Image 1 (cartoon, rainbow, N blue to C red):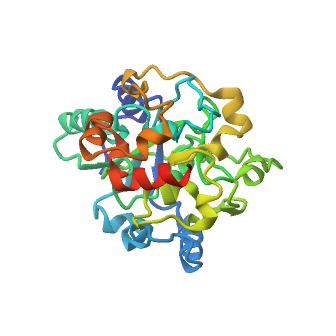
Image 2: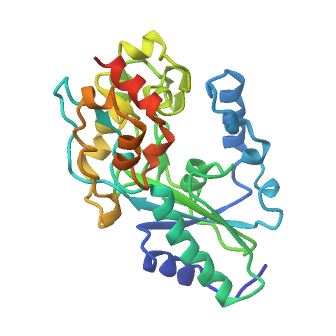
Image 3: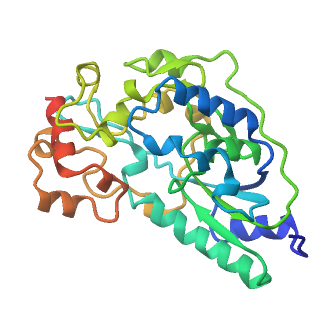
Length: 307
């Protein structure tokens, strides 16, 4: 639908509610990304991530028939704490150190969509933040927020890849921003640093080989041997390919979002304690945390695999 609302008004409101970056993408610019996704699926690189094959992910009209534009946003979550190299200490991915990012993102996305609907009652919206069949990273690149890197993450010039992404699907007809260009160049640090060679070629990650996938999504009683022997302390996710990225080394900025400050003990958890963590202690240690996706028995499994 046509609207008196301007792109600048919408972008300004997105920044006012607390997002660090915002851009506009069209639903018509994703054909090449859809082809790449299908090729990735055909090779079985999704492992047990069955939702990646949801047809809606390749056709946003199946998600929201009225959609005409996507408002893409990013939120910086970086804090300057560093992982310990002590072999007795477990490593938790930065995304899980503080409050559940879904809750933080959804609060801000709801504020933005409420404002949009207050402007004109005919405006329709639906928002997501890693919660629905939406190709977040390709959309973010199309909206000019950053580029999809060789490690599969979205890199921004201002914050590196330490950002959470969100989208507002809307029936508003908005002018798209210019897609971001690629700036990985000839760098292959992420490919070389991955201990399991999960980045099988530039821009292609095989979840079957990924430490992050296995520590978060693998529900089996035991981890595969090729994962166990390369954990290097990781018990929840893995940041290796991001830690070595030159863009993160140069441009990471401390977030101004207090919710992303680490909960006590999340930066340097003891492996022996995690290996025996009870249901009750798990519940206390990870309140309102994205790490609640990693159930107590999984966390014990991951920790024991490091001992």
